[in-house]
Image (cartoon, rainbow, N blue to C red; front, side, top):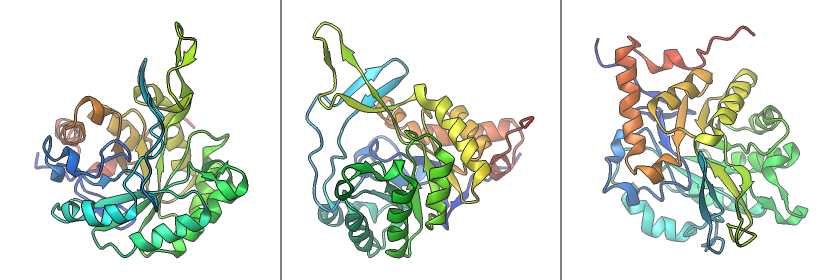
Length: 307
């Protein structure tokens, strides 16, 4: 069998294979360059960027749990100006699409930040983190209220010509409602899922382990939830989906593609093996060859169900 086609397209962004890195787990790309060729994966998604630098939450802010990792980093990042000055020059040297994850504390910040990123030619697309509280609306999280999500995605859409991907939170009653609100607002693609809210307790100290008390659970423990949500959303919307949640192996990635994802993001696995994303991409190709599949796109949404 000849080499199978692994290339896919997300809202006009051409990926050599469907494996991306998840925001917050891969720095700004350069940190992982000593461990793997960044040109072995489909795209890099940066840490979430804000207008101003942010130090994040106090420590401890990461704890290992059975089947997963709980974190409360608090969106630590260098801010948009340092990103342009210090990170973009390196990103300019690699031939892999770069997608910037961004967030704001207010509607206005989302728009302002998007306008700045729109002027950076090295950025192929924008991933919008809507899991942040809207300070002006009393702390309501954009990503848990369809009306708030519609407003923020509409503003981002109006502020850029680049593809807009919205990252959905699983901490909602109905993820399909949130997905539809984002698509109606102009999202070109959706990535899902973000982390599930959880906590860990130190019995002897009788205290929460994380200084923030609660954090976001990621890793293999959330994979069944993520697969279910990708499958549900794939049946409801027509835009490309990016599956996220406990993808540790090529098999995990292929399951998300069968459920309806066009591409996947690797997150927690990067902490166990800094070359995990490249290994998973290679594993997908090996599986296609072994199973006589000539094009990865033939597997997208090919899950067989009785209803």
